[in-house]
Length: 297
Image 1 (cartoon, rainbow, N blue to C red):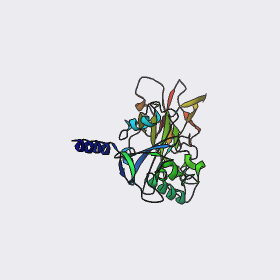
Image 2: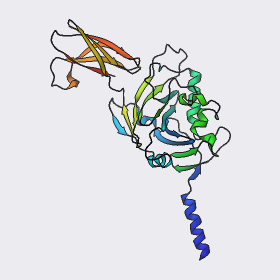
Image 3: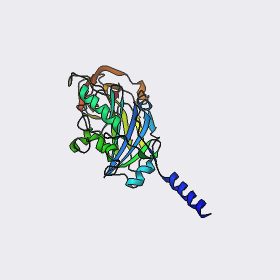
Image 4: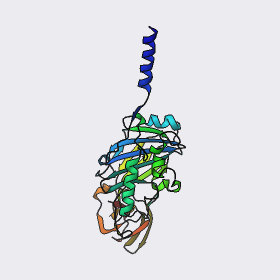
């Protein structure tokens, strides 16, 4: 009877132990990484196609990851914890960005290849094949000072702890800071390699991830709405100043009578491509009062 009891305890202990397996990154999957102290918690959110090609304004709460695993390590208030979202698919790298980006131009072919290697290597060891105790089918919790250190995000990105200054830019290969402190938001960029930097077209903004202090993660597709910062009028010409995001196209919608849906407002044919700064568009209309909004595509 005692032997059966001990065998049962051993079986229960085995079931409670995280499974040891290798992280097999699938091309095109999005990695969600939380960083705090010596701890990395990494999730595979599945295909990036879950986020690209959506209509502007499409909004969804991001599932497929275990917030309990994160709060269990860092506490129920995640304020101050760093978060990153990255993916690689073919020649395209998808990178989160915490910066109001004014220089988001395509990276060189060499840097793009390096980024692909870095993203694909998260959760694996550059020194030898390694099986990491997995908390679930798509999640690892790795102590960057422990026995699985070489598979941790921090270690992979810094090349084994050598390039510690470059961790915020994926080892210095990303054109912008890729991580954000919770709570906050992260733009999500699709970057293409080019050999003609800096005269290449700007990267494409896929959308924005928002994260709260309790770990709620939301994705909104397309550019963030532009904010009008100033309007000057001379005669029938109005000069509008407004915030922009790199690579998005902006135009002025206008009306002289409120009440109708903004979707029906006429749109001025003049457009510009944003550069991340406050930009300006002119609109010539009627002599009477007019109301404006900025369209972003």
